[in-house]
Amino acid sequence: MSAPRAATAPATVLSVRDLSVRFRMRGGRHVAAVTSATFDLAAGECLALVGESGCGKSVLASALLGLLPGNAQTAGTATVDGVELLGAGERTLATSVRGRRVGLVPQSPAAHLTPVRTVRAHLEETLRELAGTPRRQVRAAAVAAAERAAFPADHLDRYPHELSGGLAQRAATALALIGDAPLLLADEPTTGLDRDLVNHTADELRRHVRHVTDGTAGRALLMITHDLVAAERIADRVAVMYAGRIVEISRAADFFGGPGPRHPYARGLLAALPERDFVPIPGLPPELGDLPPGCAFAARCDRATDRCAGVPDFTGGLACHHPSPGPVPGAAAVRGSATHA
Ligand SMILES: Nc1ncnc2c1ncn2[C@@H]1O[C@H](COP(=O)(O)OP(=O)(O)OP(=O)(O)O)[C@@H](O)[C@H]1O
Image (tube, rainbow, N blue to C red):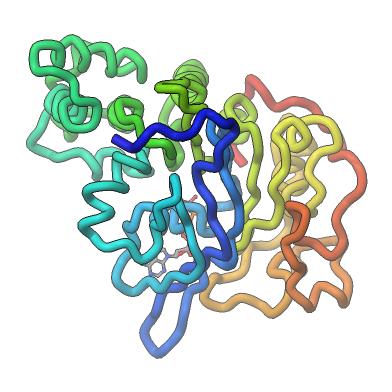
């Protein structure tokens, strides 16, 4: 278990600076999956990381957990509770990072569960190892942990291959909520769930993050999601990623209501929702192995000018030469819909 953090809130739990991840490919080519990501996460805070499929969200999370494949090269820094994650040895990652400082709701939960162990066995082992639950209390604690993630108690003796996608998701969430890691990474935690379960999962994750123990100011959540409805329900801030770069970070209240985001891509994501204009962003994102020079969104952007031939700096939470000053057309809360970005 990590040492108690100082009571001066809000403490920074995660600090990411200029994090880049490149994959070496055959023929000397590279895929620039994440480029210069910089952000902090404070105790008690939920940050939703959104963006189209393939923009680098999961690679960023894998970098924080030391789960990148052998052809990955990283640069920059990422610290949780002051412990550097990038370049940490396998022993450090296994004994003091994964589960201890960084909890995970994985994107493919079934693949993270051991095929020959039941859900109950997974929960009981995690309770003993991460929460120090005494043997005589572990059975009841496993049932309670399952309940938190709306995993039905009468399915606890099932093996991973006997679970639907939604049940595997709930089992993975139940496991992740057991730990006391200061940072929780949740990669698409609401996939395969109906709207009621999405709301339940979002609320439990939020409760977990806000929970205060031992005088600490709570934990932090980085939630990767396509589901803007879940993001609106849970997030304090929203980070928008495009072609490997974080292009805007804003307060969720501003993103979903009020003035809306300022980056044309972020505005396009919102405008594509059926509850808004239902207008898709024209064109496709560039290949991360063949990025154009300058702003990667310029080819799809109706505000682009010659200036966009240069990569915009990420300053004040925004990387755009021509940010929008005004509100998103048709802006209204998307809460209550089952729409994905
Ligand atoms: N081992 C690898 N070797 C080469 N490229 C990789 C490797 N792993 C991931 N990539 C590439 O990195 C890019 C980002 O992938 P990532 O899984 O992070 O996207 P994502 O935003 O999480 O998408 P999704 O929402 O679909 O999960 C993709 O173009 C992917 O093909």
